[in-house]
Image 1 (cartoon, one colour):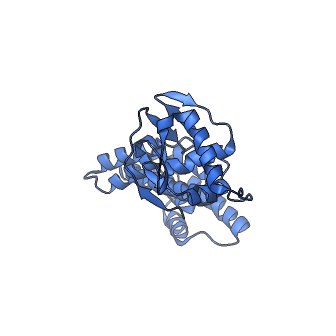
Image 2 (cartoon, one colour):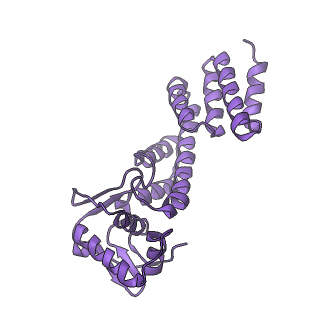
Image 3 (spheres, rainbow, N blue to C red):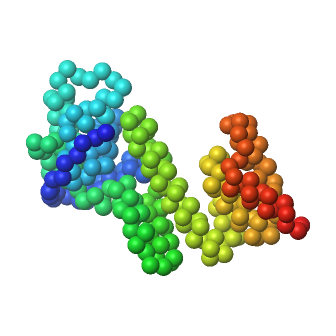
Length: 255
């Protein structure tokens, strides 16, 4: 786990880093291309702690996660930091006793902004505000997190956690739309989502609900059989109790 320390920083240029999809970096709106994989990894790790210092040891542990670390770790990290400063601007990365800090507002890092917006959802006083905040957070996603950043630590630790937060937020937004009766448009969206996440039973449950409420009972039963067969074949288990209960409810309804 990375150790971070709060630091106050100031940057002359406006540095933006997008991590929720292919790595995208810009300074004052001008795109910055970082080709070396370790530079991209180093920037991603610093961006996840924007405004806070990350120790040299923590940076090295991620950058050389599965490779033999260099003999002089401190000097090697300093070398990569110098190369990042060359690409982003001398004032883009500050240093101190606690380590290095990316000198940008956390709101300029899409992953951090996503989490901040999610934290504001519970304070919403009405469904419309809640849906708007969820929509704003979800709109920040452009694809697989850390795409193009060759880091096992980010791929195995941070990315799954962010994806789960994304899917949970998406399901909250879907629930608001179900409550509002937007069944027709949700059938299309949920059909696409279950194809993209074929073993996420909570999405299939919502698909059965909207199909049933749209009067498409036969299709809902067919979709249940699709997920039941897939789960049995790939996981060797039955669907979860929620899906089984929805299936039973569909069977007891009049055709």
